[in-house]
Every structure is written in C-alpha cells, then in structure tokens.
Amino acid sequence: MNLQPYEQVDATPFSVSREDLLRTHGRPWRAQRNGVGLDEMDYGEVVFRFQDCGRLEEITLQAQVVTLGNVAVPFAALAAFVRAQDPEAFERAGFLVSPRFGLAFDPREPFWVTALARHCIPEWRAL
Image (tube, rainbow, N blue to C red; front, side, top):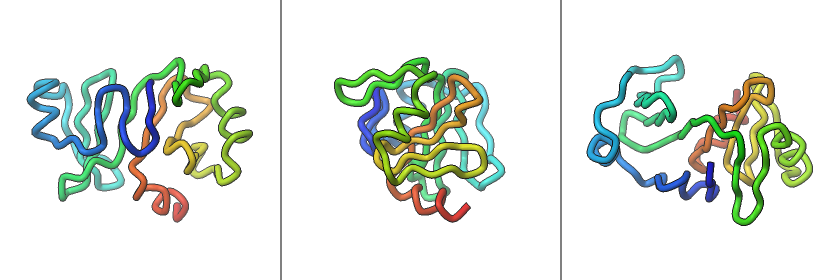
C-alpha cells in the first residue's frame, strides 16, 4: 500500500467517485450496505466504502507493507511504528487508529489496512 495520508492510496485518490470506480475497475464482485451504514464496493483485493452522498470514506486492502513517503513499514512492525511516530494514535474496537497517517488496522488481523478520509477521524474517536 502506497499511502499519501488523506489524499491517495496507490493510484486511487480520495476524490474518486463510484462511477469512476465502475469505469476503471468494472462491477465489484459484491456491493452492499455495511453495518455502519456505508455502501461497500468489494473487489476482493480492495474494498471502497462510501457515504450515501457519494463521498469516499475508506479504502481497505491487504498490505504486507505500507509505504508512507520514502518509509516502507512491514505490517508486522506497523503497530510499533504508528505508536512511535503518532502521539495522537488511539485504539477503538480492536483497531489502532492513526490520525497522523490516516489509517486504521487491527494488528491481530494481517494484512488488512484501512486508509481513512480526514473527516472519519472524529467518528472513530467517538466509537
């Protein structure tokens, strides 16, 4: 995962629309509403979650390595890296959430990592 916090994951910007994804990725193998009221487009290797208004909330994918700028962090070291580099990091519902890096993940569930839109952080704090 190449992450530009709050901006882009790999080649996908957070400004992407559902229609853009349908054009570039085709129909997802599963599209559904999840338990927190977001519309999911599940392509197997990556899941995009949108609000009803069409705003992208989250991009989740399997990431054995998360690259932040010129730093590559293996998933096994990600929790320690986040705790050392982000004094605002917090835990919610088993996830470690990093406001600095705009990501959330469960360290016990390799290798799934969720990149978050900036407006999601207060929602995670409120859980």
